Length: 166
Image 1 (cartoon, one colour):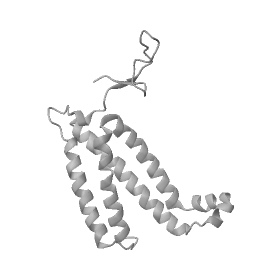
Image 2 (cartoon, helix red, strand yellow; image 1 turned 60 degrees about the vertical axis):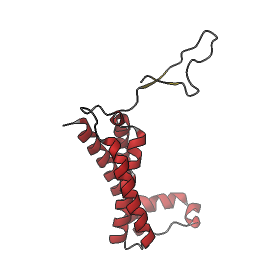
Image 3 (cartoon, one colour; image 1 turned 120 degrees about the vertical axis):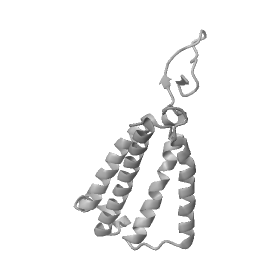
Image 4 (cartoon, helix red, strand yellow; image 1 turned 90 degrees about the vertical axis):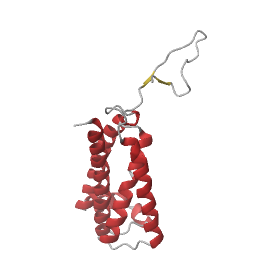
């Protein structure tokens, strides 16, 4: 299996789990009910109320697993390519919220979602291999943190202490 296919699969899994987590949390919080400032006077009761909601807890767990996959994605794909792909999840969440939760979505929001899809398609071009699966967009930049000093005892690195080795 090519590196591009693996990276796209990891990205889709991460985004899919995040979307599933958001939808599960919303479903759970619909059952919990609105949280008001009064609820924060008794935070222990509020936490218990939320923890009793299977879907709210499941949503948090799904989101946490998504974060683990996201870390793998970030180790393999440039952030400037990977992060805009997250916007695809926004489209799915809005559509599902409209379809299942019966949330109102105005016509200009649909236009915005079409523009998001267009942006994701354009940005996704950075995921495609240019030459035998060695596309620069598909690999994280090689960086290392160093503490090298010049002859005057000042840091030879940039202000962040990170030297790009590409």
